[in-house]
Length: 124
Image: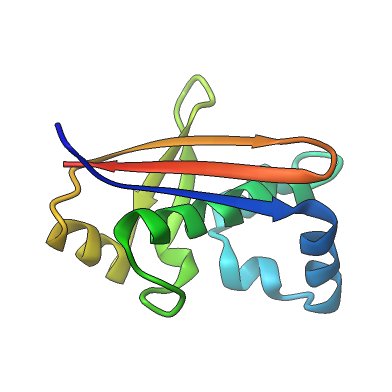
């Protein structure tokens, strides 16, 4: 397998929380039903949603595209049985990945009290 692309993103959790407060429908626009359900099961959903937003941006960077290339909901963070995050692509994001020869993804998410980070590696 060859690395097709690597993307990272760092998200300020408080800034993301404020964006959600200003735009009540932002989570519905950005995240799948399952992503929201997972995040809102926790006392504070903002760190988990911020990490998932970072994953969507990191996938864009790994594919070598910018905002507007596909809908952010076209990138979904799903969880394996043991809890590890995995990238699932839909729509235009899946088409772009296929065109670039991406056959698999590696994804790492982390957050502290103030920052969330995502690293996405596209392999083919």
